[in-house]
Amino acid sequence: MKDFIPFIIKRLGATAITLIAISMIIFGVCQLMPGDAVDMMLGGIALQSLGETTIDELRKELGLHLPVYQQYFNWAVGLLHGDLGTSYIMKAPIAPLVIDRLKTSLLLAFPASLMMIVFGLSLGILSAVKEKTWIDQGISFVSLSMLSVPAFLTGSLFIYIFSVKLNWIPAAFNALDMDGMGMFKILASYFGILLFPSLTLAFESIAYVNRQTRASMIEELKTNYVRTAVLKGVPPRDVVLHHALRNGLLPAITVIAFNIGQIIAGTVIIEVVFSYPGIGNLMIMALKFRDVPLIMATMIVISSAYVFANIAADILYTQLNPRIKYA
Amino acid sequence: MSKNDSTQSGFKETISGFLKNRLSKINFTANLIIGVVLLLGFVFIGIFAPYITPHDSEEMYYEHLKEMPSAEFLLGTDRYGRDILSRVMMGTRTTLLIASTSTLIALFLGIIFGATSAYFGGRTDNIMMRINDIFMSFPTLIFAMLVIGVLGPSMVNGIIAIGIIYAPRVTRVVRSQALNIVHMEYIDAAKVGGESSFYIIFREMLPNLWPTIIVEGSIRLGYAILLTAGLGYIGLGPPPPTPDWGLMAYSERTYMFETPWPVFAPCLAIVIAVIGVNLFGEGLKDILLAKGSRKKEAKV
Image (cartoon, rainbow over all chains, first blue to last red; front, side, top):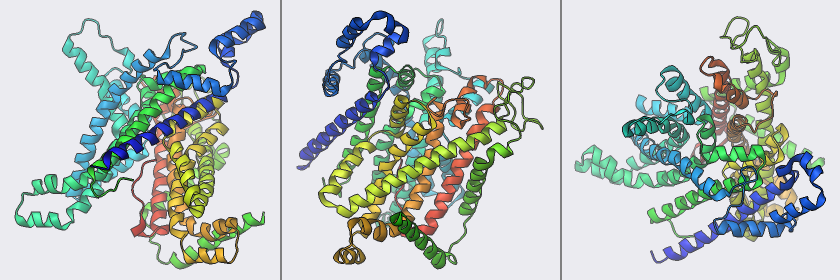
């Protein structure tokens, strides 16, 4: 525990450097975009009729006359103050918009993470206990195929089965009409709406967590202390859940924390499949309209979330495993 | 040129060595056979697609809009009356080209950076790995979106983006394997013999890295196919009318209520391709890497 504080400080310092580097890469790549913001805002025709002086003034107003490093510095300082800039296409400050969309996306990522933990762990434990039976082989086959299937196929299948064929859920998020519905009905339809996107989002991660849990549990179940517990007459359920799981969980937890990052980044495709108004769809719209401040803002928000999830994985692992030395 | 040739022959020696030593011991598992068959099938379709498609993939049959599968159109037609089977076959070409070229780029960069980093070690290794970590802390899809979104969606930009984002991941794998080799006596002998670093890295170390690299390449290829499809689906693949599996699935999804074929046919092709590559990779792993040294399950 004594080494813990310096370890955390060191780790957070590394995170800060990573985030700075990421913001530099994002900013740098966006500089490669042909044409500058003024061209994009005005379009070619207006550019000719406005005359050079007006355009220069507009450039100055946006800070585009400054050297690149100065522009980056201004942008980065703005980021630290929670100012993500102004969108060209929406002519509005980006921060509230991005935060709003991020919340919508997290509404998807949170249940997805829960599903990953619950299904991933329980299926992994089940296949470890039933190792080499048809249950284990069935689960292994399903999780392997989960890894070979693109997320948009899973999503499209869900939509086709539950929306087109069975008509249980609306096909698109914005197709929901909430007027004149009771509280319970709204909740139920929200559940229905969120269930399949988040399940799709969790699919790949469930497979990874399941495989890791299975592998580490099989290893633990072969150890001497488990054998001792069995011979001592401890009920099998307690041996699995109390003795073996305690150690078998360690590697799984790292995989889980790492996959939370994957889930956050993975929302992009899921949001397109289900027409879900989250931050991923905002990013795609920004790319389509070449709205540089909006591109940079959405990218940095998603990347930071991913980085923080990975750091959490790192810290959790060293905290939970006393055998690991702080490095 | 001569350097390149020598690397090539080093590669060939390794391969023939493997064949001599292990051909008798290879158990041609079902995995490997199915994987090879599927992969060869896709490569064949990818190369000869324009000559073997039943219809022209661009031709619009206006009398046959959104048709169910029939004898004439084996997988039905899309909303413009185009034959889906032909488009899926042409899409094989696009996907294989993007996925395999970007994997090769990633392997190329990964070998250079990974082997160099491990060979020089110390501070050089440290700095290179920190830079590597920074690129690895980008989610793959987000980085690919950034590069393609800014440079504009096209086949070349897709290849560049996927190649760059997978390179640090290959680098890490190559480096960790190279670290096992770098302290071996024959490397020391080469150093004492006054060989150049370049020679040692590419003639002495590389031949022993090939098994790892080939297995890593097959794993990457599977991921690259999925990423290519995903990028196509969100509209960042090659622009239409190039037949692209992801884009086909996306642009037909609004008509899923009437005809699900156009959405699921390209998806099925993706799944079969990825399963083929993965089985092939598993099979290769069994042959090339000793069972005990299998790498831990790691995600992208």
